[in-house]
Amino acid sequence: MKKLLIAITLLLVVSSLSAQDKIYFNDGSKIEAKVLVVSEVNIQYKKIDNLSGPTFETGLSNINMIVYENGSHQMFNQELDKSKISKKSNSGFRKNRINLDLLAFGENGPTSISYEIINKNGSRGIEIPVNVYFNSDGVVGYTVGANIKYYTNNQGNGFFIGPAIGLGAFDWYGGNYSYYYTSTDFSAYLGIKLGYQFQISDLFGINLAGNGGGISNFDEFDFGYSINLGINFSF
Image (tube, rainbow, N blue to C red):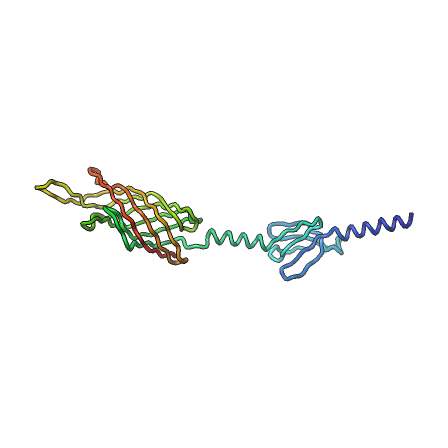
């Protein structure tokens, strides 16, 4: 009977010794403990050799991993790194951009210099352009407007599409074979802009865009289009 009690006691001791958590620190050290609390910023634990002793506390930034008594484990630095990477991917790009069209082809279509502000995740940009409209005869109008650009990729690059509006002045032509006149009238432009933004670096990019829409002086209506190649600078 005495031997049986000793065996049971030894089993209980071995069981209690194996039922322990292991805390691995960033400096390479390890302790055997009983983890009591894991919060968003720290952990509380007791040392396995003094469970009735004081409760210790340390920040999660000091912890690399906890291996629990049931064999499961919890990594902390990897979760922290993923959080930092996710935050960087959403906010680590420049959200202001100056666009300048260098080459343009079309008929009554715009070429422009513009300022663009991009939202936090880079899915949408609001562009404020100063547009110059042209055809085979030369410049036919000017507008100041607003374009909304929806990007398929985040961080303000890749394919984009959205509406474009402008208000300004255009030359309008009229008459017949014996009488021909030109007048400059207050006019509006309403169209669509689509294209692709190639972001070469954080500071520099190239965009290829197509514009198409209608021009009206609220009496007559004309259609315009253009294909533009431009450069942009981010800040």
